[in-house]
Amino acid sequence: MGRPAKIRGEAPDMMSGAYRAVWRWHFYAGVLVMPFLMLLTLTGALYLFKDEIDQAVYRAMIQVPASAQTADPDQWLTAAAVAGQGRAANVLVPARSDQAVRIRVDRPDGSRRTVFVDPHTARVTGVTAYGGVTETIKALHSLSLFGGPVGKALNILVEIVAGWAVILCATGLYLWWPRRREGAVLRLKETDAGRRPFWRDLHAVTGFYVGGVIIFLAVTGMPWSAVWGDQFMGVMRGTGLGRPPAPAAASPWSHAKPHDAPAGVGWTLENAVLPAPTHGHAAPSLRRVLLTAREQGLPRPFTVSIPQSADLAWTVARQTRQAEDARSLYVDGATGAVKADLRWEQFGVMAKGFEWGIAVHQGMQYGWINRILMLAGCIAVWVLAISGLVMWWKRRPPSLSRRRLGAPPSPPGPRARTAVLCIVIPLSILYPLTGLSLVAALLLDRAVRTFAGSKTVAS
Image (tube, rainbow, N blue to C red; front, top):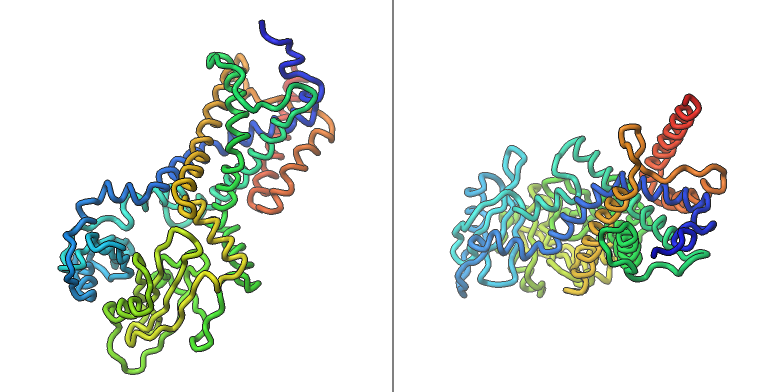
């Protein structure tokens, strides 16, 4: 026999107005953002295995015979420019001698290509769309696959979804918290997948054990957003807690145009370039810049960004997995002189936290444990979404044609509304776009309740 209803889930405190109000908002938040969260976590989980995917898809282009001989690096650029039909913009120099260099080529029509070149012979081994498969996954992850206003709007949507993901976890914790009933659910008590209690317990257990990872992914994903991320970067730079000041011997930082933005330097130094005025020296040369990088002891792999403007320094950024290994050289392409040598120790406190969060978010900072933990967060979102959908299906109203979605009923009284507002208002202040979407949701909820009330009176 089943337990009495009062013990199972209808204790007065559990079904109070405050509880039902939070439950209602938890339901609506899930309906609104879960489809987007499922897409973000699916693409995010795939991107955790970026290197493995690249190796599997482009192995024939990447692998080259190892050799002690090296062709003139400037020949790499010439070969890539011809094959990609554009201008060589940056070069990824791999860690191993049996791998091709990857050169981004900017074409006159605004598109980009990745050209693989054998560093020993300057022979082109393949050409793909810029970044290949994993760049497409990344664009889907940020909803920036489409450019222009559509891409901007979708990027803003990602920010709203991330904020609501935090609200989902906060309201879920409130619902999970033990009250005047049995203790909180810490394990599956029901083993029959045909019954709703099984899915309820699975939903609760998953949220409890992995909710912290989901919140971390949502918060550390915010810096990529178009509004909150830009504001955060502005505060970080304005307070002096971000990128280090330009060296005294160099000119101040300049903001690069899109085609000159250096690659691989991290978010703290994105778009930051240093002038390197020419004074009748020889033409800039990749060979000279690589020689400087070797003399400075910069470990491979690293990315060399080639500015289109002749009066800008070339940027050589070490490709790292751990945030504290970050290092960027700014080199005069004509003379090989080092304009700046920036390392982790020179970053401000906010910049260090920012870069560390990104490295953990991408599953790189702590090796396989880090990757598995982030993958668990991605899988958990799908488990929560599926279990939530099954629970709704099992308690859905008899007729969905009467605009009844099966949401928990809206409780009367200010106390119920206060419980919700105490959870969501602090998060809305921290994330303004989420706050604006909350206002819209409140107005919609009120309109729905007013409409339902009028229908009840009419009947």
